[in-house]
Image (cartoon, rainbow, N blue to C red; front, side, top):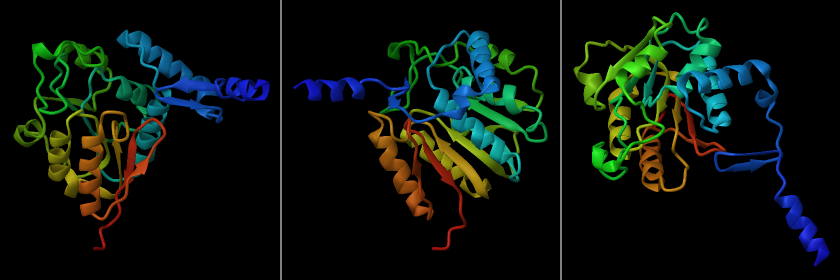
Length: 241
């Protein structure tokens, strides 16, 4: 019994514990003063304190890699702008030749994952933007960041924005139908070798989203890499089917 108790005691002790992940793996970025400084600064500026450092690291890796790939950068579902404030603070100079389009309703109401509706009856989400102006102000120092306001994909279709090619697409709409409709609309614009990062792919309660994305990307001859904190990663390859 003592041996069993010691085993379970050891199992409860982890180096890192965040975002549905417990691990003793070494994460070099959590010992990188530049990363930590940017992460803490962004939390302070936005007055928002999520414990998602691995998601941020992975999104930053995608943006860094995309700097050498033809095309602009698009985010579907920006919320307060936490991910891209980190990205721009860290890699803004490297990305200054790219247009970066951040798309959202910029409403504070929670999204119904079955209908996609955002209305006051759903309650206020602590991770969503409180207003369009708040998000606009937080990105005001980067002239290449453009906010696209409205329901997707219509806001992209109806806007005057011209996106010819995409090097990095981040998808975080919390509603499977809108995500798939956006992917259908943007798919041919994503450069071969371009990166797609799905924020909620493997998270608990997102099984409908996961199945929808598996069906979509399989139909395009693509494969999704499942990441530790629930994200899904796709590097677009030329469909040889």
